[in-house]
Length: 64
Image 1 (cartoon, helix red, strand yellow):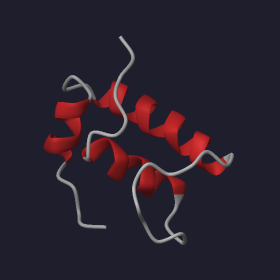
Image 2: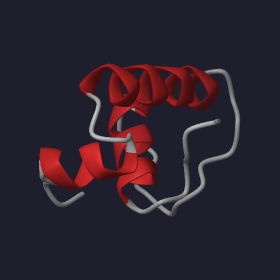
Image 3: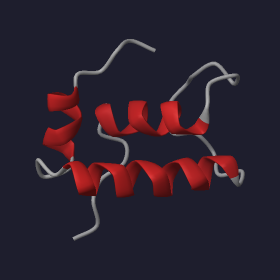
Image 4: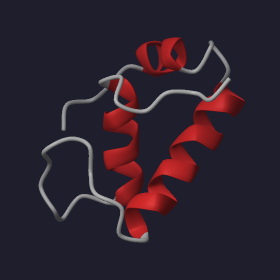
């Protein structure tokens, strides 16, 4: 995984660190519980890392 700048992640979360943390934590829990990953990644990566990468690539979005 390449380092994703915080600014890029914040753009996906309406420029809110709070929303970004909630979104990433919920998705990481889903991955840890067995939900399929939305991107191709090495299986040894932590669920939180995969969740942030999914957010950066636009695969996970905020429910409005």
